[in-house]
Image (cartoon, rainbow, N blue to C red; front, side, top):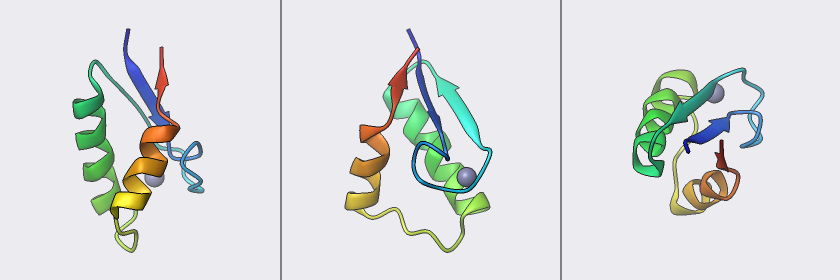
Length: 58
Ligand SMILES: [Zn+2]
C-alpha cells in the first residue's frame, strides 16, 4: 500500500502528483513541492488537514 495525492485533489490548478510509502513521507514531498511550486501558499494547519483529507491509498 502507498499514499498518493495530486495538487488537483487539493484544489490547486497544478499537475503535480506524488506517491509515497508512508503518509509522513508524502507530507514531506507535499511541503517541498508547495515551497517550490506554490510559494504563495501557506501550509496552515487548516490547509494541512484539508490536504490530509484528500490523500488516497493505492
Ligand atoms: Zn502543485
